[in-house]
Length: 264
Figure 1 (tube, rainbow, N blue to C red):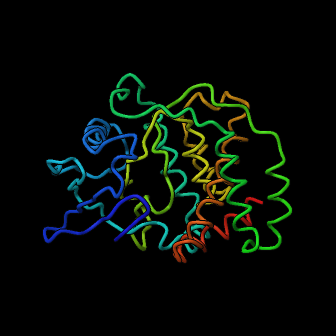
Figure 2: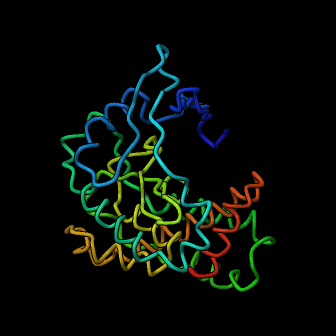
């Protein structure tokens, strides 16, 4: 399977080999990602891939395969009936993840201050590119959003997955319990609202509220955290809509279309 950043293949023994397409552009190398997974695995309430081997040149990694299938493959049905349960599981997961001390991982992950102006600029560019393809009812509210002043910046960075979309959350079927979180290549000391924004995008307000009820953290004391969470949800829905159009990935496009309709 060829993704935006990786080429992934299943080995005969059931393990996964993942190769970065552009290793020179990554902020965290595979050795750091492997070390991070080993360091946080026992702290988190949901499984992460177990690293089995690294290639000598540092461009490929062999990992255990997480049980289940990506949530993205069943997201339409899940959102209707299981968003609250999955949101609660993700809230407990983020409580553990965001509580890991920065000093414990500062040598393994980059620091990303998440400048909102850059996200906003990307959203403006994407909106200009895909405007003709957007659902009509989204165009006006999207324009209003892009003209709205940005939320306040994050005060305290936390260890974040930073790409906690439905494609990286694995679930069982039909029980729909989360069996693991994959692809930690974007992990960083970052704004925790970005992780929450992707839950809002993919599981709707029901999933977000459930996550927040289980989330035990003090960053909610920041009055702008819900504004930032919604901001990221909207920007990331735009990104996935554009990605689905550009690559022909109907699963991304369908999920992003529903998300845009809800979020705007």
